[in-house]
Amino acid sequence: MKQIQVREIAFARSGDKGDVSNVHVHLYDDEHYELLKEALTVEKIADEYDELVEGDIEIYELEGTRSLNIVMDEALDGGVVGRTLNLDIHGKSRGNILMDMKIEVSDDFTPPKKPHRGS
Amino acid sequence: MSLAKNTVRIGCGSGGADDRREDAIEMVKNGDIEYLCCDRLAERTLANAKIRMLEDPTVGYNKQLEPWFRAVIPEAVKKDVTIVGNFGAANVPAAGAKVAEIARELGHSDLQIATITGDDILRTVEEGELEMTHLLNSEPLDLSKGPLLANAYIGIEPILEALAADADIILGGRIADLSMFLAPMIHEFGWEQEELDSLANGATIAHLLECGMYGTGANLHEPSHLEVPDLDRLALPLAEVNPDGSAVVSKPPETGGIVDEMSIEAQLCHEIHDPKDYKTPDLVVDISGVELEEVGEDQVYVSGATGSPRPDDLKALIGVKNGYLVQIEGGWAGSNSYEKAKVTRDQILKPKLERWEHRDQLIDSRFDVVGVDAIHGSASPEPECNPNEVRLRLAAKVETKTAAQDLISLMKMAQWMSCAGAGGVQTTMQRNITITPTTVPRDIVETDVTIERAGEAVEVVEAIGETAEREEA
Image (cartoon, rainbow over all chains, first blue to last red; front, side):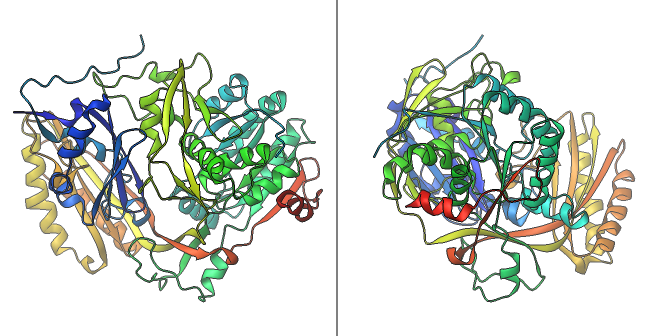
């Protein structure tokens, strides 16, 4: 087994509603859906986000697009509404913690080809 | 049901308070659209607008309203495009009067301008009869410091009234983002309340459009992973909507950015929690089964949402004054910078904060080493390299203005007089408002639609109530 960053197989965008942060995770190749679901457990995510998340974490599945939505309560120190003192008041960067997470894959795992577009 | 049209083309004119007029003009000129829908508010924007209005009662609408409409109205008239937007922010009547004035100056006195009010429920909240609890943790709201603003998220109904009365420009305050994009679809296709799946598909499209460039490649580019072309020429998204609410999402031709499965998928769940239970003022949407299909270059077909009836209550935001926010920040460069920041934080600023004479007025505070742990805090690993330069930031909430100014004075000097080479010390202070999301019963929110021809600034030219009743029947 070897470790790779989630960033190698998926993109994550984060958004805010009040003090709730959601990070939704999109695979470059839908074949890795099961791998992703197994790797991203509530415990591992809680560990990775450390003191940033004080409330519950819930993981929702979107079968239509084979993506995951991770919802974290009391995660933004009040967010824009309670006016966190964090420079990133919306938590726009929170998806990066998820993408930097390391997951275990088999030694022969090759990361998917990235959709490279444009000139 | 007889359908007047096969499709309707809806363009996004903005997804936030500061979106630029050039991008709206690009959409009107080259998007081949019938409606330009504009979200200009976020959870905090309204509070900022309210603060401006308290200082000057003639403002409090979107800060860019004047240059935006001055530039966009001539193009919208040429292309016969209807504009819907929550530009009114905290002061819808003033926004309506200003847009009418601009239209007159541009020689378009015949434009019909609708203003939608009623989202402001401050007076009702001040009466103290409502029992409100926090939307998330159900704790009772503490209004002891006196509410500064209270606004309910209003839905499609008043927009439909204005559209039925042939308004050219529809302005409101806290209209829900999504409702502004959904209302024109309902107006064109005549969806009834029980046509929940069409409404749900339409709402999904509205959701994909209402964050502006987030649907077309903004906030997406991951160098060497997920590349977005021509980032300097990003465009706003548009949709060609079918009578069943499914749609092809695209963007104006020959613009930058991208519309593909990844860009749309990234936006699909943005700021949504349970994908089977996305609450809007108009219906509850289940997006978990939404499917995306690339049907051409920069064209994605979106379908498969389902809906259920609207929630009983409306979401509302209640804002109370909560002291002042201050920031003091200075920095170092060179190979010993990070060490200097830590010494200044731990051996100078923290002890001084402990000894500060107004410490009882400190509500909250935090120290950040910008470049190391300012954003991700305790989730940040120790840096793998020695940073070339760092900045040390102290942010605090303080009860009174006097104490806030004193803290700035104290810490500014402490930073200047810290480790070797300390420089670039900057400070900011602003009023702080704490906003609490809650819900209120629908029946306390009474919206009102006023339509005026731009040339007749105060005269009401349509009997709105009757028109609306016909529309709903």
